[in-house]
Image 1 (cartoon, rainbow, N blue to C red):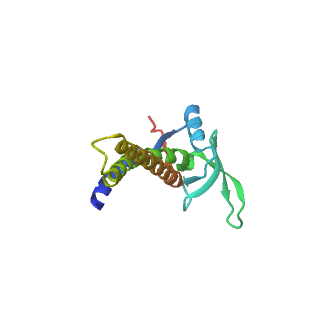
Image 2: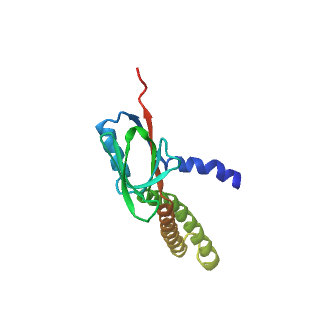
Image 3: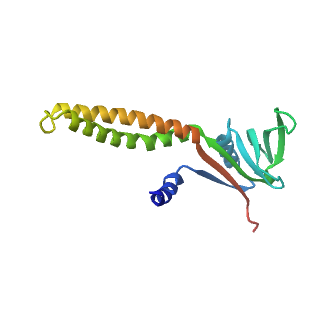
Amino acid sequence: MRAGASIILPWVCAGCVTTVAAQRPLSSEKTEEINELVAGKTADLELEGAPQVITGKDTRIEGDSLRFLKQDATSTEWVPAVEPVASARRIEVTRRGRGALIGLGIGLPIGLAGGALAGSLVADSLCGACVGDGPGRALYVLVGTAIGGFSFGLLGAVVGALIGSPAKVEFSDNPSR
């Protein structure tokens, strides 16, 4: 079981990560795309010369500057910071809404199939008098499908929102000609 999960899980999650390649100097379209991706989110910023990843809020690229708020080391306040875009190596954000949609997309079909199976098993055990695929049996399967789909769809959406869907911006310099 563990080997199967280690083979399947990377394929399932591969579609969950968005990576934007950003070659410097950035075009206005690429700057706008990055700003839309990170708007209103807390970002992990990997900067050249910084010993560790910096957590920033309200991250925005303006011209040749990367502007963000970072937490002051001596207090809990967020203070403005500006770094050159040339020093940026990577920006990573977590998108909760997209994570919820992915979780829903995974949980709903599992719940529908599991609920239909559970409804069928309940119908088999409770509906001994039901002949063939009569309306009583179909009702159990239908209710099981609805309950399973709703339950696992909701669970998947909640777990997906908690985990989120990562999005990365990878910076590189345009090779000189």
